[in-house]
Amino acid sequence: MSSVTSGILAGLIGKGIQASRTPAMHEREGDAQGLRYLYRLIDLDQLGLDLDALPSLLDAAQHMGFTGLNITFPAKQAIIPLLDELSSEARGIGAVNTVVLKDGKRVGHNTDCLGFAEGLRRGLPNVARRRVVQMGAGGAGAAVAHALLAEGVERLCIFEVEPGRAQALADNLNAHFGAERAIAGVDLAGEVAAADGLVNTTPVGMAKLPGTPLPVELLHAGLWVAEIIYFPLETELLRHARALGCRTLDGGTMAVFQAVKAFELFSGRPADAERMQAHFASF
Image (cartoon, rainbow, N blue to C red; front, side):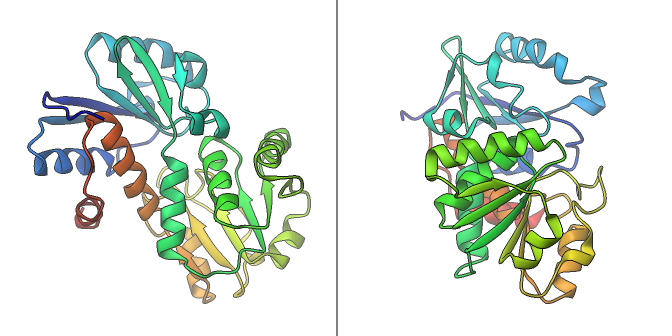
């Protein structure tokens, strides 16, 4: 990809995102590379908007010369019909967290999958991956599920408040990774009891949605537990898991590495991942 010398104007669309570290990560990496890099929050809650506003927000971003947008809860799947093209990864996952606006086109990408996989490799190396339970089957959940199976999880059991979404994700995963690698869950207590790992991909546990995605009484010391939430870094789920002696992974590494790839897509320049990790840790 050719180097970009003009300024970058990027933004994040989502709900309840005032605590996001993404703008500062992008801007500080831009500063380090001598780029004029501005990154703005487009918080649907703050603006009093819902998903119906996505078409007008995308139009406005194009008219105002945005280079690209990151997309987070709850818009990672709702954004897809509004795009002109999808990367092969975004198409396979069925979710988009990065949109590049270039030459009048809107091209969707998914950097969440890469980000979670990198976090798992760095934060939970050599954990057992025979059976894993995943909470959530939304846009982030789809990316994480693809990463889990790609990283060697043998059987993934997905729970979702809307069972049809869990089944649809399991069907997508089995089409990509082979039959019976993923199932829609029915017996949460039984599955967690038999699991090696538990991953929360729901927004429950965020600062604006406190709580846990499952009864903490189901946790046991034999589990490793991963989150994708990073504000706060220590969710109630992770706090309970650590008290039991579980190995845990917070959402920080995923946040950094999805941002590394998004920075490269927006700027056309490679990002310094270690520097962005240091930026993240300093906030």
